[in-house]
Image: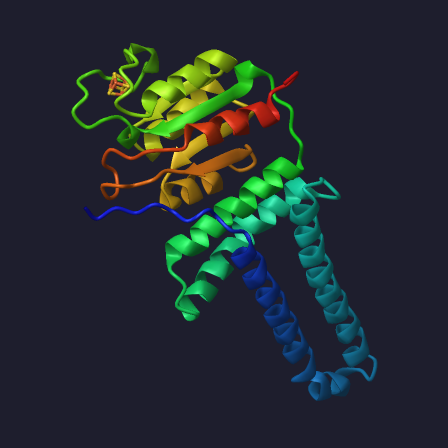
Length: 256
Ligand code: SF4
């Protein structure tokens, strides 16, 4: 058995690499200012000071932005610009941190687990409240038992709830909260489902790679990502902690 069960996602790694990125950025800004200073003075004696002021402001913004991000996730509160910070994390920090991870020899999936935890923390900091009919649970097809003959893609209610896989528990949760639930066979179908159902929040189950790309593709739509367990290896009879889905929905449901 060549299985893998993800460790509980830790955002600490992402935060640490983010701090390192911030220091590196300030170093680069300082070098950019310091190296051509003398040359700039030849054009105008005030130019090094003006450029220094601009670069100093950029450094300050990098430090303040990082501090705000850390504080937001630590306190779990929407202090300022949380939605914008998700954009910065997803579009700017993730690729930089993935490169950084490569340099430090940190496995890609470890970085992605940490990114998903960071994303979830920012989404929960927004304290969103969403009506049941605008929440979508999106599941990968590999959660269904391989030899189950029922086709649940398209309509999960066809599941006869035999309990041999987690589709039963997940269908029960969808019924309990009256939220939409879909099983998608891939990214293209998942995107199609999202376009059709127009949710305000998605609770998605997938592996590190698919969750990361899904969160990126869906922005600005908030996605709570839950990693699946792969006791038999990737994409085959995977499992998920159904309680986590229940808790995620209960935390955002209006009136819960
Ligand atoms: S719980 Fe549903 S999907 Fe899973 S094996 Fe049973 S009938 Fe098939």
